[in-house]
Length: 463
Image (cartoon, rainbow, N blue to C red; front, side):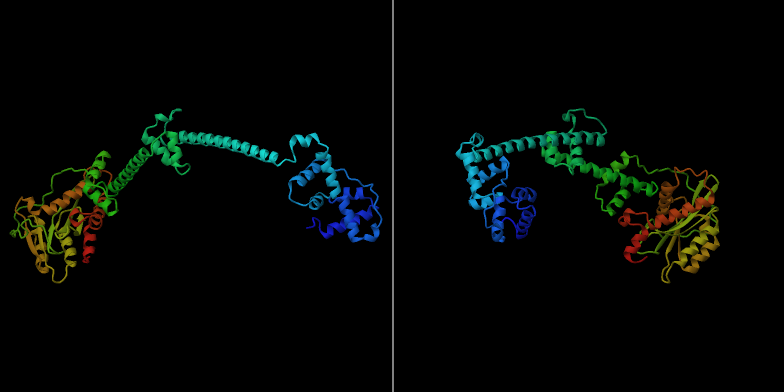
């Protein structure tokens, strides 16, 4: 296969005639081909113009490297002599001359290098391969040492960052837990196996510490969630209700752990007892029997109602709350708040409650023997709505303990332990109303399976 294209051959011929048939100048300017090759192209293309032998005044001097390479190809290559001559742009005669020059005359350079010896080149190749292997081996060793140095540097820096202390140059000073913390921090950047090698730590030890750290991190998150729930609910929930809230969020943990965490974090529900307000003014009208008999359970809403009045003393005066509590689920179905424990306070509350009743609902309304429940206005409203009056024995608070308990919880959760000196009466009334709404709609009860009264009724489809 020709090495040069037709265009290249024609370009050489044109240049040859342009230079006045000066072969030496043509070869030098052309940059490719040889005098013999160009002569052959001339004979093939324009034989009439080169019918006579061309004068051999165009001898080209080739570098020694070219001559040696041509001779090596002649000795080692499977190509024909003509192909090799064509490759270097020389004639076969020139190629043989070079061969005789270097091999036949015993050129010392080629003899010493054994350029015509296959064994020499095989040995050279093997030697170079060995040198390459050693260099690569040394390179890998250097890279490993550099990698190790970078790893150790990152270990110390990460230790200082997450452990907040300098460990000197001794990795043995790290505890297994500290080692595991550093490994966890660096495992996205380095293989765990390599970091374990730096620490000289067993994988089993790392796995154990990793589980412990995960457990501790989980506890830390749970602690933060417990704090949030405690303060979101105005410091009113003890460990049982906090436990239920966590359970509703899918956080499964024992009550004992919740109690322990709350004790550790000093999350304490305040319990303060104060003297109870009494509305008893004597027997101003005949008392009615105790229809409840301390049975504060009801199988449906609006069957048994409890009511009473409680007093709050703040800097600007006194505020009174009068609610109706449904025994079915403890829901405060209605309430009134005012600055005087008068008939209007309780009568308005009763009117608001009666409006909520269905036509066939006529609950028992249980109260203490306070004057508010013995005035004519109260009695008239009860009779007109078909409600049954029920009263506790004189001075017997257990007869209305469910309502008393509601007041106790309320005051412990939102009143006792707070400073009310700078709160106006109007602001305090608003605070009470907010609490009552929260108690009805959001405050969970253990007896209702961790639901608020409103949530419980909705779950039954009766809200």
